[in-house]
Amino acid sequence: MQMPNNGTRLVAVIKKWANHANIGAVISQVNHLARHGQGLLIANYINQNMSKQLKDAGIQFLDAAGNAYINQWPVYIHVKGSKPEQPVLSAKTGKAFQAAGMKVVFAILGDSELVNAPYREIADQTGVALGAVGGILNDLAAQRFLLARTNGIPRKLNDRDNLVDKWAEAYPYKLKKKHRLGLFTTHNPGWWKRIDPEMFDALWGGEIAAAKYINYLNPKHGVVYIRKARMENFLQAARLRKADPHGKQDIYIDLVKPFWREAKNKRMAEQAGLAPHIITYSDLIETGDARNLDTAIRPREKYLRQNCQ
Image 1: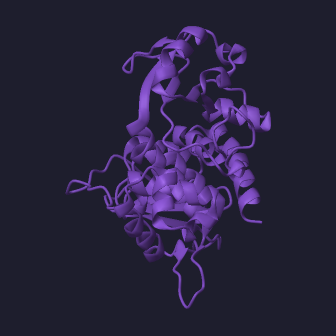
Image 2: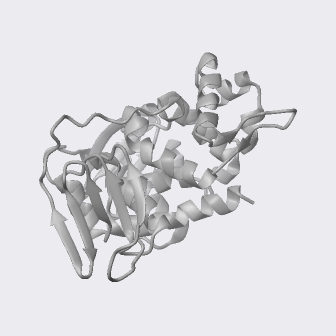
């Protein structure tokens, strides 16, 4: 899309459905494709909270309800608060991006050779029902993320870059939410520094994992991947207490049960005690926080470098 008068070309990302839960992922995707100030999101509806986050991130937008933000001199348009005439329905996603499919996609992103394994092996490694595997792979092929087996040529992952983004966008509300154990808090911002997660068979995710991976971010909030059986011991050692979901705490620690089986592909995680790069990436962009979005680029690039060689 080219603007009149100044000749600037805007890079448009079209989303049939965008919601507040994944707005961080959307911002990250647009930033990958466009220079700052040249990204444009087109969606069926963008609410006021989302419009503020997009504007703060320098991303312009248009929606079917009449909301818009265009900032290209001499054109400036900012319309917010318009409601759609009919209720906005969430977009339907194929089997690959439902809970079971997300587990399979995660596994093959860590081991691309798994797409050619027998269905039973895929089911065993992912914990997905055997009867669901074929439909998930077919859906990936239909979306052109998987090149189907033909004339003896094995299946092959395709467009891994976009597959990572689509998985990370869906993860918070399709999978992570289903495995959440609870939300906790503390008055001590350095609470995590004296904890060894491996003593509890746990993994750091989110900001703490990013800080460990790249020594760049000063963590404020935390994500901990831990089995429910080890949760009470961890909470006592870390001196965490239950957070009021409707209150206001300075520090949040999200405890989540890992959905994945013991990783056989060591490239998914670089250091012991840390969640895989893709998980860390998704945790960061879920927040929508500007510093986290900037930091999220690093674990994403590390994963792609390690798995696209």
